[in-house]
Image (cartoon, rainbow, N blue to C red; front, side, top):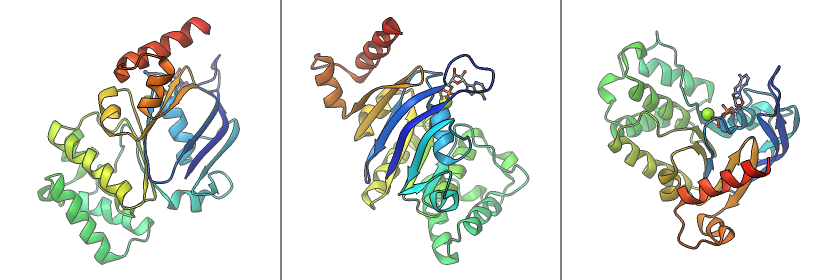
Length: 247
Ligand SMILES: Nc1ncnc2c1ncn2[C@@H]1O[C@H](COP(=O)(O)OP(=O)(O)O)[C@@H](O)[C@H]1O
Ligand SMILES: [Mg+2]
């Protein structure tokens, strides 16, 4: 579904690579957690997947489409929620969702149905007619989530989605991700909150200093670390420390 081959990125003026020689294959129908400490390269990787940043080297394909050579086709398969959604503050929630619905050519009745479904779930139907500038951070995040799901994307990508969600919304949100893959879609999200990943992911990849240092199911990673009952947090610390001592 999502394939990164040998992807590297160095920001202008930077000494080291933000992402280096990254190979990653996210399978159809799974929830994949992209884990790593702050500054590891998660956001940079995601920006290259969704076409906000060009890789220096390597290739990214989504649903078989190369994101640089076939950007429209690739983007059609993607729903993306950035870590800090920057929405048009002067639109109402409904105007925003209609803008997204138009861009992705979501048919009117389907659009209305999905808007109702998500906004009821997030308990924010009442705010649909208000300007986005009056929304709290969490409400803007929920609106961004709804917008990203409006065309039922085959690949749902989220950068640090749990930040800013209250516990109830976070719970719905986990169910929402599960429901999305059960419909035959794929979810890829980054997080530094390990409990979230442990609860919900089918597989995880751990990135550290721009390099993928582990990838697999939590059980597989546990086996690799030879400490059978490790929590993900212990594993994570262990793996990222090891890498420090080498590098
Ligand atoms: N726009 C930018 N310009 C220069 N360096 C950047 C930029 N964005 C991120 N970086 C650097 O790239 C590395 C990876 O950052 P990022 O991808 O944001 O990590 P993460 O999302 O895992 O916290 C960090 O060292 C960060 O300082
Ligand atoms: Mg980030």
